Image (cartoon, rainbow, N blue to C red; front, side):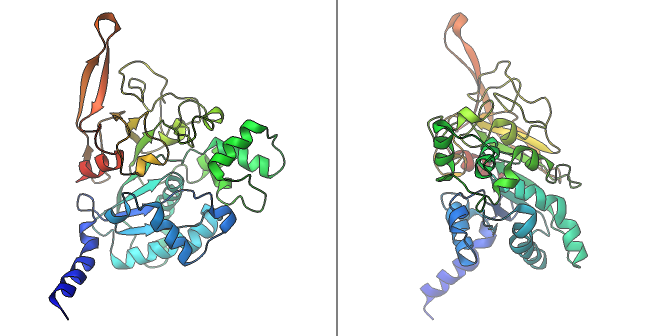
Length: 349
């Protein structure tokens, strides 16, 4: 075999060891994929979809992906046919023996919460070692539910009125108006349903939140979402607030644009949920992309992993404006030219 071929193989084999974040293997859990409701992928197509989902930034920085089809339910086939085999494989391989970090996006936040709540018991009952999950990085998390899912399920079941504005919003998000036969994980994304799914996990794994308040849909979907939103998920859900309400930030003293002022933010959060980075310029999909969209601020500049190690961001405060019209703003250093995902990756390393 040629030396060049051997070097190529060595590089491919060593990829997993280079993908770790701060020395911890990374496990990706993607979000809702609307086209799955009609295409109903299985097998290799689910894997291909999962690979494409993360291709922009995180795919080549991860060690494991848990891919799942959106036409199924979290506590049903998603857990039994897609999550459980991966958990067994990870346990047998010792992937998380020294700790690992989950990275989720959108509905992956809800799937990850279900994993955190159940994985230890499932694996112990199978005679396997539970995973040592030290933290979860949740981008645009939908663990608190999505109001658009409530509307979509109601319309699909014939119990919701649909006008042109709602039809546009659902079509922009889903690409279609759903029917009773293709709702899938939308059932789990209903606000009350999502908030009841593994709402109080015994495991104390920190859920570190990264949140945007932009939109890919020119604000059309925001008409149906309370408070600030990222075009799909309202801030009560993405911030990890303990209740569904209209919030304008993940913090009560820092706005999405970084302005230091009194704003409407949650007074309490779901167990072990800690919002960190925020930006009004990042939409639901852009938080996991590899493009700098806007300056980023911090609801909090750092948080600890389960083992006490800390994820910390470098921030500074500056005055903008003149005289009595000036205001103070908090900015994450280098955020004007670094994507949100890259800031998190760099800080974690």
